[in-house]
Every structure is written in C-alpha cells, then in structure tokens.
Image (cartoon, rainbow, N blue to C red; front, side, top):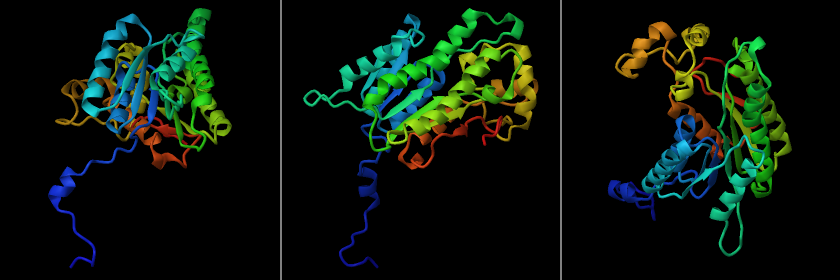
Length: 301
C-alpha cells in the first residue's frame, strides 16, 4: 500500500524521465584525443554529459578528430571543440587553453572553468641504453613530462576552487617494471607518477589528481611494438587475472594470438572506464594515487 501523499511512478513515466548524466555541463580537456585511448575517454565522458576539448597534433589527425567531434556532438548533445596544438612546442599547451577559453567562456561574464583535464598525449620509443640519443630523450620528455606541466600551469587560473576539479594522468606499467629498452619512456612515466603525487598536494583545494597505469592495450602504439618486446611482456600477461583470452567473447584475432602473447590486451574502452570513474563526483576522496587499469598486469599499491 502506498503511503499518503506518495504516488508510485509508473514504468512509462520512469522510461520517459530524463536520465541524469553525472558530468552534465562539465568541461573536459583531453590531450591526444583523436584516437585510441584518448578517443575512448572522449566518448565515455561525452556520454556522461561533459563538453570536450579534443587536442591533436598532426595535420593527418585533423579529419579524424573533426569526425569524432561531430559524432559525439550529435550522439550526446554536447559541445566538442577540436584543437590542433603541438604539445612538444613550449607554446602549445598555452595555445590549447587559450583556444578553449575563447570557445567556452561565458559570452557576458567571461567566466571560464575547466573541470577535468586528462593528460593522455604521449610518445613512446624503445632504445637500448647504448642507443639512446639526446633527440630521443628530449622528444619523449618534452611531450610526456614537460607538456603536462605547461598545460597545468596554463590551466590553474581556470580550475575550480572547491576541490571539484579532476586531473587524470595516463601513466604506464612501464613506470615501475623496468622493461629492457625503456630507459627513456619508463623514466617519463615514472616522472608523471611523481608529478601526480606532488600536484595532489599543491592543487588540493582545486582538484583531485590521480594517474592510471595501462599495460598492453589494443591500439596502434601496441601493435607497433616488436616481437622481442612483446615476449618480455608475456610472463606478466600470463599472470594477469583479467588478461586470459575468452573464446566467443574476445575478438578472434586476440584469441588466436593468445598462445604467442600469453593472453589478450586491454581494450581502450576499459581504460576509459577507469579514467571516467576518477573524473566522477564519487572519486572525491581519491587523490595522489596510481590506479590499476591493466587487468592485473601490474598491481598498484
């Protein structure tokens, strides 16, 4: 029996009721947002109501980013701004923030707030110690380490002042596993994890700051790694609880490849789900952490 004054909602009314989207109206900046994990993060956040700024670097990514932006706008009724900015250029991060402000600032008050920043853009390159060159070092450290610093510097004046901001850095299991050939790349990701902990303290009144550490993910970057490097990863894949291939569930190509690789890689949407969790209101009590986003390839602690 219903309580006095209480009317049970019919299933029809529930079906027609607008669904709450947890990031409705938030503004998220995603670097490297044109493909792979970045595009998957963009899709996830847009589905939750966030407006997006999608950064890309090369001219060859322009059409892809424009197409993704149009698709997300149409599907999720959000605003999406593609911005070409070379984060390896010291002026690139500031240009990205300035362009976003020009698009999203309130037309009358000029108010502009960045709620979410996902530092996803990165470059990788494996060289044995005696093959490391200054150019290889500078390229990876400029994009993987310096660019997030410069982006946060440009963004700080526009972050919330009530701890509601969210910053998520894309690290890697390479930060702590010491793979052969990753003197430079592994070092950049270890630096990013250290910066995550420092920023969590420095920006505590503005935003939470966390990192995620993917392992092998089915993206262009993973497919470009050589057989020798993939063999280094096989023992970790074999012991990862969630990387065992599933016949009839996982794409057949990964099932077929599992005997050589040890199991299946992660999928970009699985990484995006962990990032989105850290961008939510429910993650307000989590900061300065590296969160496992690799199926148990490398446990976080």
